[in-house]
Image 1: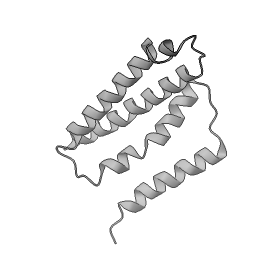
Image 2: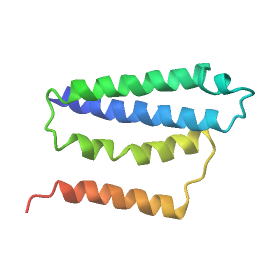
Image 3: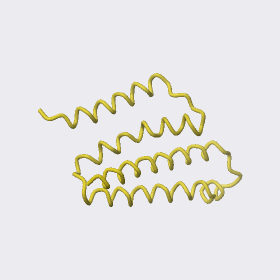
Length: 113
């Protein structure tokens, strides 16, 4: 059971890294249409995204279906952290407030009334 949670969190972090990698590559101006989509970083990004989908599928074998969307919702937090670390982006006040609201929604969705 714990392994499924580890797989789900790993899948979210890997998918977030994939998105940050795509974002970094999108800021480069490719010289041709083909170089825009057929280059190492973009292909690696799609491979990472595929890996995260496989990990999510494996995690769902043991995990309650209601939990995975809550773990996936934390991807916004991971993207903000990875963008700050690797792209030098500073989190804005609105982004931080939005992420806090998402995390609050995750907590509220698991409260038992």
